[in-house]
Amino acid sequence: MKRIRKLLKEQRGGVLIYVTLSMVVLLGFSAGVMDIGLLYENRRQLQNGADGAALAGAQELLKFELSAAEREVLAVNTALDYAQRNGVPISQIEPGYPQVTCVPLTYNGNCDPASEYYYNAVKMAAGRELDLLTAGLLGNSLGDVGANATAIIGPMLPTEGLWPWGVSPCNDWDWDGDEECDIPVGTPIILKFGAPPGSPGNFFPLDFPDSTGGAGYWDSIKYGYGHEEGDYIKTDLPWCGKVEAPGCTVQDDPYVQTETGNKVQPTRDGVDYLISQAAASNQDDPASSWNEPFDQCTWPGAPKEPREIPNLPDPPPPGLPKPPGWTGTGSPMPADWSGNASACYRVGIVPIIYQDWEDLAGHTPVDIIRWGAIYLIGRTQAPSGQTVIWGYYTDQATISGGRFSDTDTGLWGARLWE
Image (cartoon, rainbow, N blue to C red; front, side):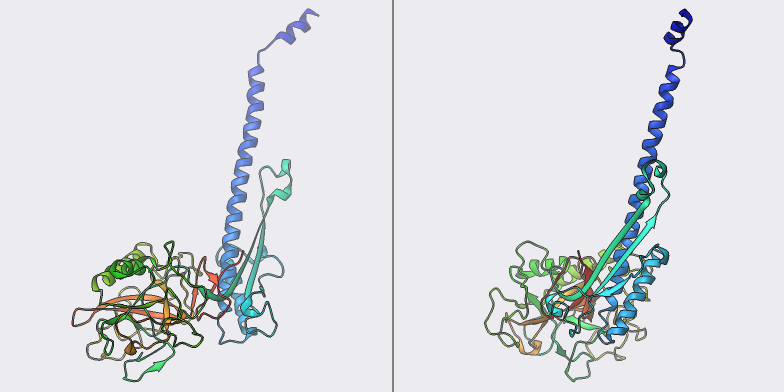
């Protein structure tokens, strides 16, 4: 009996038991932390892949020159390709996805089958099973992660990134002396002229509400009008000023008018800021993977600086300086390039005005009839020393955080939907 009591009072080796139990608990916590990290990282990868695949597919739905069936096939194949290139193999894509479908909105008649824009959405779903350290204790179901994404297309409203240059829909775009309509895609256009003929005091800048003067103009180039609280972004088109454009019946207040003066230094400073920021952010490198493809800030196969700008007469007309890096050779910019107007320094939205610049003088109200996205090429200097700004135009852009319009604004885009 005494021996039993002695054994019960014996404490040698007790520390070892406590340490062993503590190690088991600590290892369990460590395994749990590692599993949580593994789940989180895989969930993030899947979600990024699903988001990007849906957006990449939705971009193909913007090719309205193709039939609905052709766009559907392109959207599915593009989404599958993007998912695989970004770590989501076919085996992890849920059966039946990606889907090309319809999200009911005003512009497509709430999914009216007769609407040209019936197919306006791409849905993606993916899942992945993981081997967890704690699976035996907590169950295999914790090793399943999934992601869903929907991207839709629609006419966009500018909410930021609005540059203060007015583009007229009719101009002498190819400098052959004949005025033409429909702004060309793939050909450099002038956003600001050093000394345009026939427009005394006007050099293509616009004066947005509450951004008067050189400082406001410079700020709108650098950051885009709409980024500050109180900036007036009207939600429907047209923005009527002169009451000339179709649909204009009354003059809106506040309205947009032309900005007088050449404003050489604010223009140079603003444009140089955008181009330097694009270079510093690696957005000018076609080989970079900066959120491609849906936040793409250049176009596939774009040449390195100096850029080769195509489709200009050789030599240019007298007095017209060449765009930056122009060599007279090179391939046109593909019509399907995209840029995120909220994130790409070289990409912004410009107003398309109803009036012709040759008919404008002084501070004159203008009617904004639609929007267009511009890829900023850069600036050149006219023989007189004045600054000329060049850009590429498109009616398609990817606008993160942008709002869809109930009617066609002329600027179509894709964005994630809920």
